[in-house]
Length: 349
Image (cartoon, rainbow, N blue to C red; front, side, top):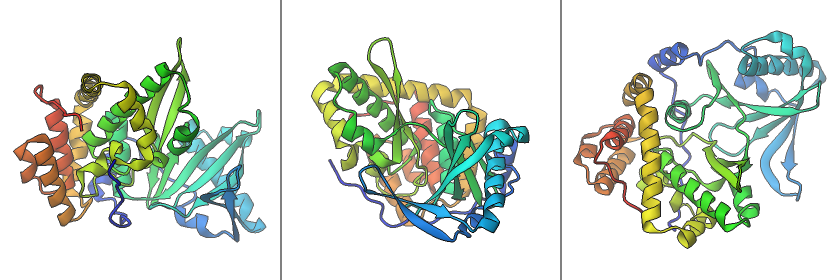
């Protein structure tokens, strides 16, 4: 499998005034009592290790006592806005258990662990830097994937709910020793995930950038792969960067497909997912068109990357319309438009 790496750290792109109007119209904007920069007033950070003593790339954050109560209260308010539509009566049942900071990645998120005092159950949410690429990625996920995403934006701060599941790297290490029946289901889901990413040009889906949600079924398990990192939405220049099958971190699942699936079976699963994506696109066409209009106006990458990607997509699909695309938004629109054509047939890569 080809090794894919980002060419360099992706810059954060600003949110345009028109995108803000779109987000306001669809209920994504809100007032927040705390901004991303406010979280940086910590007094100490301690590396967070996993149960085996390995570095997780997260650090647990500690604050001065005179700031702690105010920060914890405001974080509970944010959680109530995110989960309870701003019902502040719920705050009295909540407390902040831990605040972690990730020094790895583009948005340098803070992860907040919230405890329900009634039953000691916990949940998480994230506070991140705003990046237009990520916002477009979240919106396309909500529109075109089988998953709904909940997030809020205020000025330069992005609030995201936690997406529950087993991290992909942990899953491939510990959860592939299952029945043949389940291994085939895993391979099938990865093919469908591969198509979802490629159609909307979501890149860098190495195993630690997605989770696997496992649901018990009548026989065996059902598996759903969900992206959790949307920073690399329509930025890189290489076609393979948008196909999870080309990342070596996913090889363990790829090998299951090679072991159990035929060429015709792969094509069947691809067609099944294309049909589902097309149905979602048609059901939300007004919203999707509005979003793509905005993507075409915004800068999400650089000219050299756009030129290389449009050439590779034109060659891959044998579709000359890609060569007239001038930005990433137009490439995404053309990719989706091609999907909606009845004669669209995706080759097995």
